[in-house]
Image 1 (cartoon, rainbow over the protein chains, first blue to last red):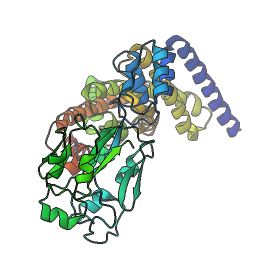
Image 2: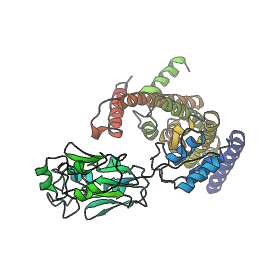
Image 3: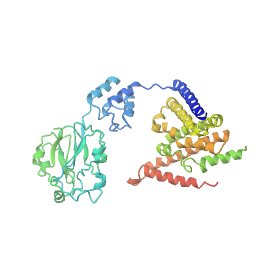
Image 4: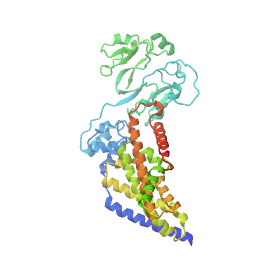
Length: 264
Length: 192
């Protein structure tokens, strides 16, 4: 008998609660704008936070209220942006694509090792142990903290060095704060000179740690006819606005630490 | 029943038997929604609503239905049903009347359903065999204690945002340490 009461009481209780709720739903239902869902579908959907909002839906809400420019979404392709423009009835001009760039050339064989690291696969951990597994304390540790962080699967480790897949990279910048060595930077997707080294040590120390380290010799500074590359703090830095992509500095560099990129 | 009794019951519920600091119930929203005083207060009001009405309804369900049918063992599952209904109702009401407050609750509003303070108060009411008035008061005052705790915590955390904290202690660790110190402070009231 007791089992009958049990089932009955719970069933009746559930039915009453359900009825009450459906009544309340009719009274209290709020119509949400269907455009929010449409816009969210056009966005990347990775909730990467590259736009500065809490997630794709929060960003769609801001777009709808006119607070945010749809082009702020770094992961939506151009045709999707146009679709958002159609939904909203506004013109959307895509921004210049940016990609993450690894500022290090020190793959295995080029960067000299300090010791063999055999611990947890974490750049943060390894880099805090006696200066890291590579002799250069500005080098890519190569254990893939950025690979784990990337929501788009655009990063990989090749021969102990992080590599960006420009096709997949959306320039959201999620990987940048993750790198304990701060060697990842966002750069416009164009053919510019990139100094793939951040070693600010004096030439002798820098050279001893890596055969591709910038020694601050200023040869590139003299070669450049556009005043686009300067040695600051013992390391060459390219001004992307002035660089024309002539690649003269690449040929002149005695350390092979400059190359052209990120676009081919 | 004299006013003195109610007053001592109030003090006992809000301070000495505070749900968070001495019973350790409802810690999840306490840590989750205590980043801003305004949201914390909103959460406190929501929990107060749910706890008071949960105490009221479960009293009738327990003594009216379950005891009469001698199926007291069904208390937990039927209480959960009532609480879930209340929370759903509250969610709709907040969406309708306080749309600005709604997104700041995030996941924690549906989580009141599984907030152990809410289920806790209904079970405590039964275990202590409170009468109707005391059950509702236990729910209401207990929730006031919850609100007090979460608002105080939010105040502390707002100040922590601007303090110079060692890197490894930033965020959750320092919040847990401050919650622990607050609990020690509340322990001082025990025995009043």
